[in-house]
Amino acid sequence: MTGAGPSMGRAGAYGGLERVPTGIAGLDEILGGGLFRGGVYIVQGTPGSGKTIFGNQACYTHAGASPAKGDAGASPEHRALYVTLLAESHARMLGHIAPLGFFRPDLIPDRITYLSAFRTLQDEGLAGLLTLLRRETADREASLVVLDGLVAAEETAASTLEFKTFIHELQTQAAATGATVLLLTSASAGADLVAAEHTMVDGLIALSSRLTGWRAERELEVRKFRGGGFLRGRHAFRITDDGVRVFPRIEARLRLPSRHDHVEGPALTTGLPSLDAMLGGGLPHASTTLVGGPAGIGKTTLGLQFLGADPDAPGLLCGFYESEAALLAKARALGLPVAGLIAAGRIGVMWQPATEGLIDEVCDDLLSQIRNRGVRRVFIDGLDAMSRIAGDQDRIVRIFAALTAELRALGVTAMYTRETDLRGTFVEAPSGSGSLRQTSSVAENVVLMRSCALRSGRHRLIAVAKVRDARIDPRLRLFDIRPGGLDIDDGPERAEAILADRDAPRHGGE
Image 1: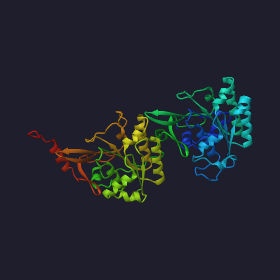
Image 2: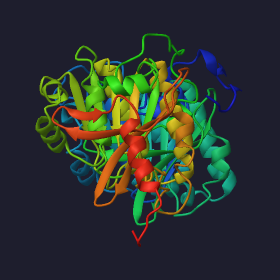
Image 3: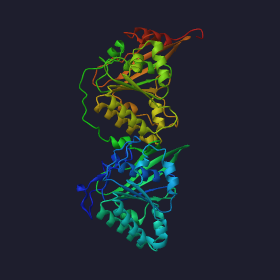
């Protein structure tokens, strides 16, 4: 990971300071472990970007809240103080966060204290606000302080120098008490988010929302973080029923695989002896196979046979076009073993409708299921649909390169499907961009399926284009879909005869 170098500030080398988890899923990974104890951080964003939920979630997690409501596992040494200036009333705020999974009313007021300081700011200015924060932090023994509405404090200041002095005094207080401070403040849409106070604090986290076509996506960016490396750039996030969930950008998170490759091992059967022979003995261990073909040619059926070829290997099906019920119906209609393995839980199904979604969330959920279930075979049905979920199409090649490398590092053998035209030529993205043009460069094996018309009939053909470290038979084979799945010819003779007949010159206008 890359980021700012260590700061030798008021508390000495940051390397020896304690980390304070934010409680925001995915953010601590971006930060390299969380915030630093005694640090001061600005959380800035446009109205509605999620700052208040962010601050409250940090408080409840810090005070010992569990994702499961009713868990009494609070830590007595961890307390949070939530101070508001120009913000909604506490009753309204609590009403808004009450449905969220992190909320626990039993933590109020012993572990989490809500306090309005607006009147103090009005009557006594920034000096009075500093005194209140110092006193309440000490009295409540708070180790996390959230000040919601920093913009009001800035507007109260008589000068830029006075406001900078206020930020400096906050830092001094935080260093003395060891309390981590979050300053929540607003920014107008499109603002550059650069201000004098940003140079003084230990970190700056920016929340925003942007339109991608007709779709709105929330984004988080750590713009500054003293004392540790962090994942730079924008990262997608959602506000879910459990609160804020951040999805570190997959190509940054997996810039290097989580472990060394272990690609040695016996070849894996596809479940089709004829195809195994064409592949040079089967699929190489921990490799990725791209299966291309037009709609209805049999790509999904081939993938289902691949998943069900080894009953002892836990598998995962990630689909973008057909629901679990539809896939089960297909498997049962063809009598494929995978149907029983899905019903028995040996093969999991992850369905992501090809409507809206976050590509980083899909990859995160996919890798989580692989690790949690000990998956060894993965079938991703619909590479085109998966890529369209990504807002920035320029990321696609890097995303799949990172995902492929991580699957290989985890010892997973994967198969993707991707649409082509009837002749087996890959179809580009609807936008006309070449977003998927280089996808085959991150797949070690490529299998192509195509359709061939002869007189009134249409025939299915399959060929192997490449396989990692194997001597392949690239000749076309004829195949049909019958009960039991794909039935591929042992040799190329019928395919050659059909192609020769199709290409033969016609007479009499034929």
